[in-house]
Structure formats: structure tokens, C-alpha cells
Image: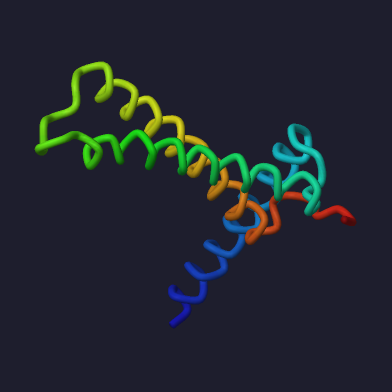
Length: 107
């Protein structure tokens, strides 16, 4: 039991150190989060999602089930990659908020 308590104490200390490191580093790079600066980010992600889905829907628009051409595939890939990067960034920010890594400002 003593070893288990030692491990748990160690993990708690590490977690506290990680939290402090994240707070310090992130606070230097981004402003406090408010509804005014978070909601436009969410809207941008939604727009990128819509552009990706629009590009994907070109499959359905082809008459007779013809495949889309290489340029359309390249456009869809670009739209997907752009959307996924923005979505991942937004999720990283949500995680940082949940963990207390970022400052929350007044709206």
C-alpha cells in the first residue's frame, strides 16, 4: 500500500507540474478566452466544415454516378485538411480550457 501511495503522490506532482507549465507557456501566447474571441473561431470551423462537405457533395451531383475528376479530388482533400486542422485546433483549445491552461476573461 505504501508503494501505491508513493506512485499516486508522484503522479499528482507530475500532473501539477504539467498544468503549471501549460498555463505559463500558453498564457504567453494567447489572450484570455472570452465569448467574443471564441465564438468567431467556432464559426470559422463551421464554415470550413461546410466548404469540405460542399466539395464532398460534388460526388452526388455527378450525373449517372460519374467519378469526380482529379482537380475536384484535390480540392476536396484541401478542404478536408483545412477543416481537420481547424477542428483539431479548436478541440485543443477546448481541452486547454477544461484543464485550466488558459485564462478565461470577462465577456
